Length: 335
Image (cartoon, rainbow, N blue to C red):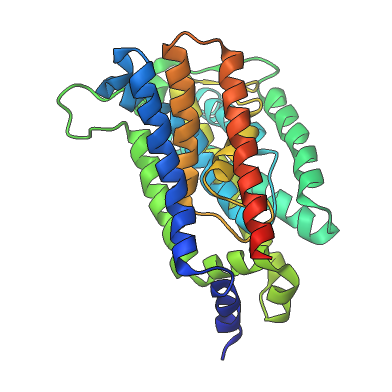
């Protein structure tokens, strides 16, 4: 038996298959319940196709960033710098377009690459200094936010309309009668979600991510290069935050160093609501996307009902606490 088979064997013995399916479908049932409640109590405008499209667009930024965060949390880590990386990405894209005059595709790649570089630095510092991810990414949150403000000289970076080309269309509403049905940004989220789900399920890296999160020392003894896995997941997390920054730029059409403050909390909440465990070793891409949609449905529904923002925050906070409590209860029963 190979080391990889030993790892996947231990993972398979953690819980029965029907429990894994229930953990995956649980968030989806929660989404249907939350949406059904607002269908009943919210104004009729909540039940329109336009509202569904709006929910999809609003969930895209958090959802894309949450894909990378899912990998980090499954591996047993956390990344508090995601919101700052989103802001940095918007500043980099705007600077490349307006100051350097590059094409939109080059600017978009530059924004994603800036995010990936931040993630790479996080991973290298965590593995080389052997410092817990919470501390390293907390420091990087401040460093990256400061760098974004430095690039923009503490101001928004405006971009001439003719330089945007197609970048402003990523998060735009779909024209009536279009075959696309959903905005480009939502399709990007769906495509990336499928890619990451396949990575976790069918690749060696995916199995090693679960193994490291389940028991890092056992994974190391079985021959897994733990440091390499951690560097890769943090790099991917940064890249997805950079991609979320591209969507944020498309939405605002400016580079804003002050945007996405606190976004990392929404991103982490989406993973946790979707069934991800902060203890590591558990999580699913479907659950994460559903978690982002649950928070968006709550925000949109409360907004259409005219409820103040503090009510939305309380409801979301209660859902997060309940999700974490259920996760801890499930772990105690398993033990």
